[in-house]
Length: 236
Ligand SMILES: *Cc1c(COP(=O)(O)O)cnc(C)c1O
Image 1 (cartoon, rainbow, N blue to C red):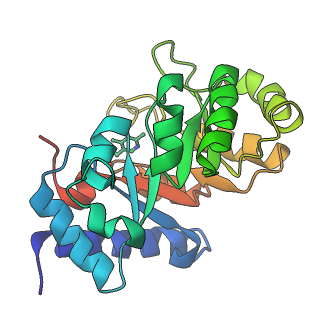
Image 2 (cartoon, rainbow, N blue to C red):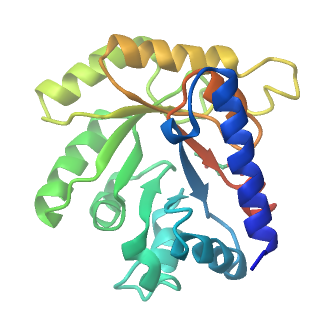
């Protein structure tokens, strides 16, 4: 059955493949996170039909409470039944008082960005017995309002995570300044910086690229892209 969502999904897969090819990579090297935040249930249901026929298995959310309402078992999330079939990634800012809930719900947390949160996550992992994979968010544009470690603080932060907290992040994540495409200031340099920071810290995964710039991110080495509106349609 072809739905609007399945057409959007097929289109994104085609674009991922083409961007991968252009940069001498293959689509299999790139994980597509379907960002389901603020999307209506009917669209998510259509995406889960793709999941059930062996397609899209990775989903991303940016708010703990909203994610619980969608995927959480205890809270009777609207799609609790599908939770076991997907990987769930936290891509939004995380407050320390939500660390336990985040460890319970998510398989991956992409937004570790400060020592206080590292400390809370260590405690939460201990308490829940769950150990989500970790990415460190980097504020590549050094925007004051944006979460993430400043590039010049990253090496020290990674070292602190490894030596003091026993945490070993597997990836870095960034969100380039908004409107960089519109303003003609390309996101490419932000993606290149993230790749450089990862390489010098021995980190393999790069979560970068959204609806407006995922092809550029792939050409700069993204291993994980986070696509919402281009995959589900515009949010409410
Ligand atoms: C919302 C969001 C996305 C997806 O944005 P689109 O432009 O809709 O693809 C990706 N990453 C993060 C961190 C987000 O909050």
